[in-house]
Image (cartoon, rainbow, N blue to C red; front, side):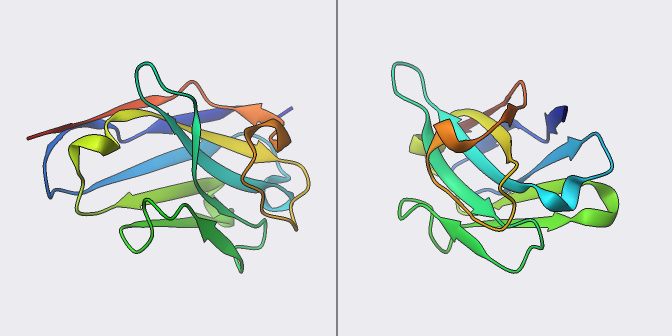
Length: 125
């Protein structure tokens, strides 16, 4: 079992930045690939970014490419999402998720085994 707790969400103005954190329980954090997803009101959950267990491979959605950066610190059992140049359309609840197939990074939500409770990000114009 892996428990995930997100933090770092909040209200930010257009063009601002936020860094989300996701702290994981357990001693095998580095064996899990980690992903960030988001869900806006009335919309389906969508993939944002993912990182392999080692941290050597990452992928992100075209909608956030070059603006959002995923990283991890396995010594701290934490994955991060640095979000820059935020736009109103980035407003959503952001979730982190863990995939036990740690050497593969995947974009489908169904591939992930554990989920956090989410953190709200609101971008005001």
